[in-house]
Length: 304
Image (cartoon, rainbow, N blue to C red):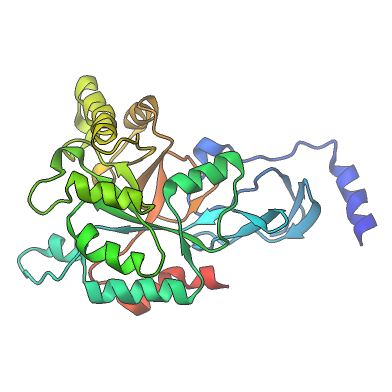
């Protein structure tokens, strides 16, 4: 069988190999790291990499599976990482504020979700860690997951942090630098403690404005200024960025790159895959209405 496959590789060597461009990878399609791929029959791909060759079927679109590919004894390169998106962790029952309800996951439900993750073998990592893995080949846990908390509300420290710390997990806070210390938002001291505990503090602009409608000067201030603010507050420059309300375009993405950010996340639904535009990674939103059954449905494919 191996001899036959080698002959096929030789026969195909004169043909152009297909490599998906990293910056324009569509959401939901797998990527091959350190390998070249060519179509080999309907629904099957032939992969040629440093470990030899193998045949397999592509991962179905939309499946939030953290797929691991061995690259060294005891280490894996994780190609697909679910990035969960949270806002508030709180009890909120104002029927007039439907948006507030949608953004608020109750502490009880959050605990259930975290316990489900740990019981199914997931290990939380920061986005910084994912970037280092994908760019430098450093290993990740096979079932890696990133837990992100947008806006930097105080309850990420008072409600989410204790739950994750008790289970040895970490998260990523996307802080609006101009809101740090305001009523209802985490203080610089609280963010500093999170950072010391292994959390990542990413940027979410200075004032949470729609970046697509700003002039160049204001855009640079909101993006670059947020990085400068957080660096001054916490002593460490952020490497990740979240677009307010998920609104961005090529101009905005260019400003994020110019400010030195290495990764950015959107609100588009999908799995983060190595080879995608790393400044426009999708996430999986967890809503206030997300039951534990719905949460399981989001992540169950990653357990198989």
